[in-house]
Length: 448
Image (tube, rainbow, N blue to C red; front, top):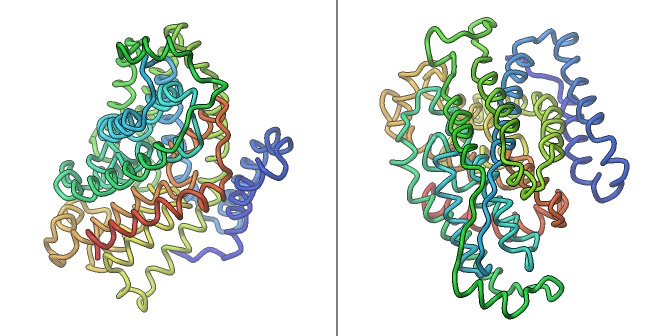
């Protein structure tokens, strides 16, 4: 792989800076122009790759990943938008922690994206008279990221590992303890913060309403038919032509690009929306605004981050740095980059680098399986995979762009009237003081 010019990372950092500062410094301009800016910067980098570097493989692979990403996220958003869940209960710190832990468990079945989209609106409604930005941030920490550590269905990086050959139950067998530590620590911090949260008097229910709520807790569920479409969308994830022989695909070199999976997901989404309960859609105040924001911004992010990913991989692959490919360094390197470069491609790059250290091929399923169980290379290789997996999943919550559901949850919360922190405020006021200490704890107890 040829090293790309270092100046090519400028569009990525420019887009990152505008995502961070636009809503604060020039909100009116950003609100109306962010689509054009994201698409322009993405196409700028794409054009350079195609016509200057004459590199077609990286852009095609990135486009395939982006289409799969956009199709899955859009389909899940539409399906979840037609499912209305509400609880006739008083929002207490204990109940809120219960919702977050339930979401963390659910994330391992329907993915962090599915769990986030199913629960974020009910979570906001439950706390309508006391909703604060930190509650949404910890929802992102726990449900949208850390929760999905136990199965390949939970988070995109782990699913990529599964498709490449990591056994399905490897994550469950090896990552339960860090999952428990991470979820417990974050839930405890949230409980302490939430215990200090007082209801806003303006929205506080009357005494007789509170007495009625306390007397009987009730749950309302509308849109059960959408559960079928949701299962179709999630089930279609497994239709990967690189894994299933004979599945129709677009061939590009040695790569097979999926389209059957995306057609099924988008068709299910269309039928889901067409026949969704109007009561559920209206109850959720459903609109396409939040998903359009994610789709456009991540178009720019996916293509502008291509050179950043390649440069990071090139530096890490240098012989003088090979000794640094240890569990400790891989945890922090894969994690830090996952927080700003999207965790799925970061996981793939570092898994490839870790295997190359032992002359094992990322494209060979048997090599990946041996690497996962410490066979054929070094008995410590499974520790490298554990470090990469933990870093990619947990650090995905470090910023809004670390994992797909993060920005989606932010957009939904803002559409519901929650004033979410800016990009930098999210990192400085929440990630560094609350998330990073938990990440350090996991490193010390599990990886170190």
